[in-house]
Image 1: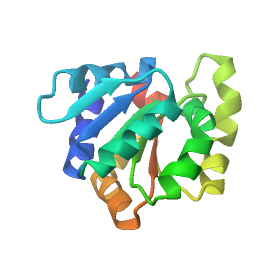
Image 2: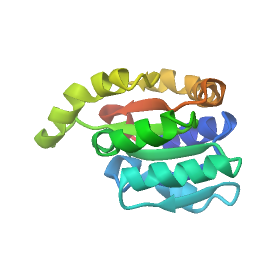
Image 3: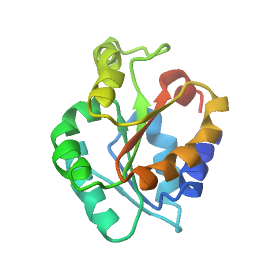
Image 4: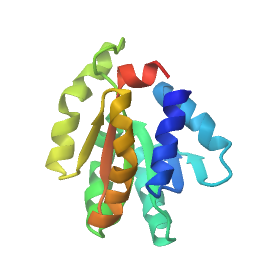
Length: 165
């Protein structure tokens, strides 16, 4: 749980105070931490695109939302990202378990891993790729950056980084 605690700490330090998640084995420790954190709002959601709408409402309520999901969730949510969050310049942090990266055991995850960064680049969403613990200290600055640019940012956490947690 050490890595999950560190990530949550840096997200909160960067201003994130409203968290949503779509179930993911690699995010399970972060979900458990947030379920017991009385300083922030946390809720599970069934689909990523629904989360984008909830995040928009949270932002309008003066929160900095963070939605936690697998990289496959970006594919599910493209329209709501572009037509809602980006159109209305809403900062949201996407904390993404980067499934299909080295160490992954589920072959079906590899396809989305090959195109995740290209999709985020096409959407012009700034990315922070965390492949080891030394990358985690950049999360708070990157989280705060979403407010500065008034748009979503994505934090990709590799499979090997998250599976060891």
